Structures are given as C-alpha cells and as structure tokens.
Picture (cartoon, rainbow, N blue to C red):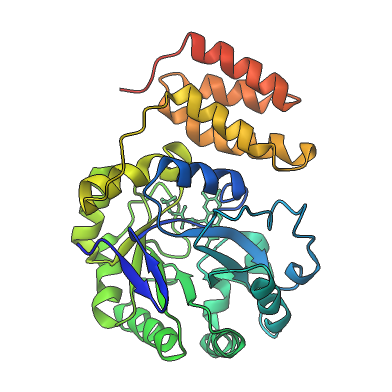
Length: 326
Ligand SMILES: Cc1cc2nc3c(=O)[nH]c(=O)nc-3n(C[C@H](O)[C@H](O)[C@H](O)COP(=O)(O)O)c2cc1C
C-alpha cells in the first residue's frame, strides 16, 4: 500500500479523504479530523455552481474555512447547460486545492435539477461539463461517482475512461448503484473493476467504519486510497487509526476521551454564526452517539434542544452516566 498519492504538485499523505457530506463536511468537522490526525484530503459538501459565486465566504457555513484546512477540494453540483466558469473563478479566489464534480448524489432535490447521479444519464452533458471544468482550472480535478444505474461493467468502465480522457485527475467511487440505500453492502470488488481499467488514482468509498473495513476495502478494490464519510462523523479519529495501522504513519493514538472530542467539536462550531450551530451539532450527534450503548438517548436529547447551550448541558448529563459501545 502506497502511503502517499501525488496529484500534480499536491501530495496526499496518507491517501485518506474525508467525504463530501451535506451538513457534516464543514470547517468544524474538517478541523477536528485534522487535529486527530491521519486525514490527507478534505472535501466541502456539495455546492451549487450557480449560488457559489454569490456566497459571502466570511459568513457562509458552506465556504467558511480556516487556513489549516488543507488540502481542500470544493465539490460542485452542476445541472445540464449551466456555466461553471464563474464558480471555478471563485474557487481560485478562495484558494481551493482542487475542484470536485458530484456525479453520484441520488438526492431527489438534485435529481430534479438533473444534477448529481442524474447528470450521468446524459453522457455528453457530463463530457461537456468536465471539459469546461478542465479548461477553467489547472487545479487537480476530481469526480465522485456511484457504480451506475445498474450493474454493467462495460458501461461503467467506458464512463470512467471518458472522465479520464477529459482530464479528470482523481476518481472517487462509492461502491453502490444509484438507487441503492446505505443498508446495502457496498460492492468494493466493483470499485476494483474501475481501478484496473483506468490510470488515474481511485479512492474507494462506502461502508468504511473501522481499520478492518479499510483493510478489506483496499484489498478487494486495489484502490489508491479511501474516502470516508459517516465513519468519520462517528469516529473522527478513524483516519489516524487507519493511517497508523495500514500506512505506518507516525500518528499518535488519540488521548482524548469521547466527551472531550465531542466538546471540542462544539467549540469548533463557534466559528459559525450562532443560528448555524445547532443544526450542525444535531447532525453530528446523530453519528457520534453511535459510540455509546445508549447513544440514541444522546441523539434525542440534542435533537430536542433549543440551543447549543442546552444541548451541551444535556450531553454532559448523558456522558456522566453513559457507557461506550464495546
Ligand atoms: C449526510 C450525508 C450527506 C452527504 N452529502 C454528500 C455530498 O454533498 N456530496 C457527495 O458527493 N456525497 C454526499 N454524501 C455521500 C457520501 O459522500 C458517501 O459517498 C456515502 O456516505 C458513502 O460513504 P460512507 O459509507 O463512508 O458514509 C452524503 C452522505 C451523507 C450520509
């Protein structure tokens, strides 16, 4: 396993990425993951190519970013016919390290706009958008896909070769079909079919919650690295564990307790405007609570709080009587 991955001038070391996730992959979680160690690449949540140029970067929770959050790829979702150039110009001003195209999100609101995985129904539109992105930036360009609408190796491989041919530098592959839910096991072996058909690096994504999952996913896919989503919201120190155990990185084991990590997250949320904090805390707690035997009690306590202060007090009470998941 190669402990680093080069993309032009950029080195991802280790090749472990925090996945783009709406409401989760923001400045606070990105910073927490960096502090706990082992993450080599960060993504924003998906950003509208039309709204991005108008966002106020100093207050927008989507664009707020601290200098240490590097390397950071900004993920765009694009509908057919939209211009990407103003958004990419904005990303240059914001100091992006890379630009990512969302070709995998099946959410109904994106589907309605013909963006995310719906865009892949029209291969020529994808080609046009990727070509437009490629000529708009010399930054690394990545794309994130699912395996397709149905299992078809030839179509999948052709599609990925097209992306590669149009100048995509890095491909993240979520090992599920467009309509498959998270309860279905991801098909890591199918990510391997993509990996062996193209020359650009591939990040394998889907269902990685432990070092053992990471090891098996890398073995089955032969991918160049991993992208982790929910597992990182649940266990933000997971990158460090994988980096240490699979890549031999000099990451020290985390000495903070679970409550300390939770309260550090709350502290990091203070960089957002007050009205933007509670929703993000609720979303994070939904995942973080899974570290505790009765974690759903924590999630409910926070979910029904009316302020971050109330949520913090309730979390404190929960931690004082709780047990970690075995
Ligand atoms: C709450 C949530 C929000 C997500 N938002 C995005 C997004 O903005 N862009 C994207 O490409 N994928 C998004 N995803 C998909 C993840 O990036 C990832 O592909 C998926 O969660 C599978 O990986 P995991 O099993 O490691 O979580 C989201 C997933 C979740 C759970």
